[in-house]
Length: 335
Image (cartoon, rainbow, N blue to C red; front, top):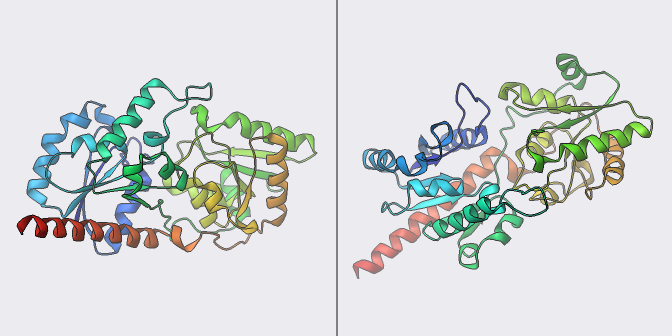
């Protein structure tokens, strides 16, 4: 089977962490024997490349003759739609949730973007979402052709390790309560303000607390940020299926998260953490609970369905269904 992956997110020398989850999914598919060709559009080339890339993508399709195309992100469909080749699209979060306007709603620009995403997805053979919450936002016709396939985690990379060594490596205090926050403070929807308020509440209770913010960290260093922590804290207003939650679990680190995206689906046992409302006091209670139970030598907490190999096999099953459906349509047309 040959798949053409078209994505607006992929690591570059200048941004080695940008879209690394797409790269890792490609690598997992290749390990399962799928021939994958990658075309990167937009990104550093600018938004006009969604349309300007159509000639380049058409040439790649003619040369490679893929069985189907897999688009990542809603706008990416602009580069492949109406080319006579079946495609599936993975929606990634903002393309279906919209972007916050800072007042509890979404920006006009992102609302238009969501409409474009859904309209183009009507031409897709299948629509892949990463959480039930994302699926619920789809138009009814799209929900009927949707598959829930979250990003997977490579446990050969994200795996437990010695907490003391991780703290020494990152210069973190040995005996403090260390909370990992793996998001950008420059993105208001990630709610660093709420994470800081939770830290301050814990300090008021007498804890020595360090909020370890990982932003633009080289990919090879990320496991150490998780291993150093007593828990991961996720406070976002909007998410699809946050990779940092899965990566923390794979490193044996429990998670305290708000009920957003697929977080409640992933944090489904006390060992994996707690889901709490967006309130610093209640989040602090949850952090205290999971940190007391955290073992510095914990094993992986990642559920089997979120492992990279499991996700790759689920994607292959989606691709297979598309090929079968397309073959059936051709047979009907021939008769």
